[in-house]
Length: 555
Image (cartoon, rainbow, N blue to C red):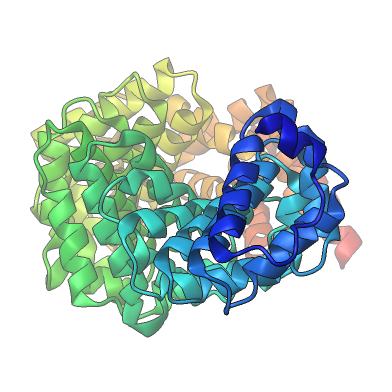
């Protein structure tokens, strides 16, 4: 029979009965099932056109149409020449659409197989489907009630298309993601994560997740939970990145967060610490809440109303070897500490215990740096917390650890954060009008087992850093101005400046009239130069004379 078919790959004969036509098509489908025979269909445009015409005719018997689909599916399989031929004949996609949008479920499902065979691993065919607006048709199919296998075929085809480099936000309505999310079959759920992930790479689809009171994001979180139940860490990792990206778009932090979402994420944070899949849920909860809590009002609400910080502190206390989780927890706690109203609440609820744990994770400099940043924020503009840190025995160990990290760590982020802690500490103590100011400054040195030379060297580290130069230089200069109030400290500072030509040059650059730095930073730099110049051996030295020259030039 194969030889007979091989010799007669021409138009379908006219006048065949339905039964004989169906048999003829079935034989053609079987003949096209092998790679060698499949090649013989190339160039048989008239035959393929005849099959397509039968397929798109709704009046033709469904059995005949099914066999037409079988022929096309086999002809397209792994044969780019035949795929090109499909793009040349008339009505190929129209024929598939008539099956997709019809009432026959078998035809609909088989049409999806044809389309998959047509475009899988073939860029030109995928672009052809995109240009023909096939993705929109596939979304319409998902709205039709059908079994999970049929849905799965549509979703797999959709994944092939949306992962093509040419697919863009203009090729599908962002609201389609709502339909796709709700169509994912419960069986083999992991197989369809790629479709969702590919769509969420595009910003309009991420923004769609925030519409309608975050309803789509709630569905995505429910899918995330199901994947955790399946213990599919690969799929969890992909969706965790998608959730992070969604929470990073601008409207996320300025929207009103539904209580249901807040409850879900808080529940994730409190999950069993030993489970690997739960780690993804905990990290996601911390990250999503961290990206939401970026303004003082939301942070005050989360700390004072929902007491969320207690759940986070409990997680850090229970966590054993999960640097990613602890890093995410530190990020959320840092956000909480930005608001002045929350700083004391965090300290009263033992945030320093969490900080201590973070500072004793040498295997993760990222976590250590985050812990230092958290400590710094609890001290910033908080005299009460600063006094506690330098006066209470249990907290002195923490400050001593900061000092050790500065002296012993080669990681730049750790060194800089340790230095910034002293900026925050000294500023908070100095700005509180207290008759015991000198005693408190002395307590800073004693509590950390430090000396003035080391603190000044910390400030020099900040002044030497080129990244975030405006912020770090401002903190260092202002701290040095405060330190220079003391004559002895000022003399030490002047000696250090004489020994550090680079730092001297950096400070000089800050006070240049046409420099790019803020006027406030320039003003403080000039104040530092003036104070050091008038109270040290540098009165006639380079720094003071440079300052005087600048004043004269700008007068």
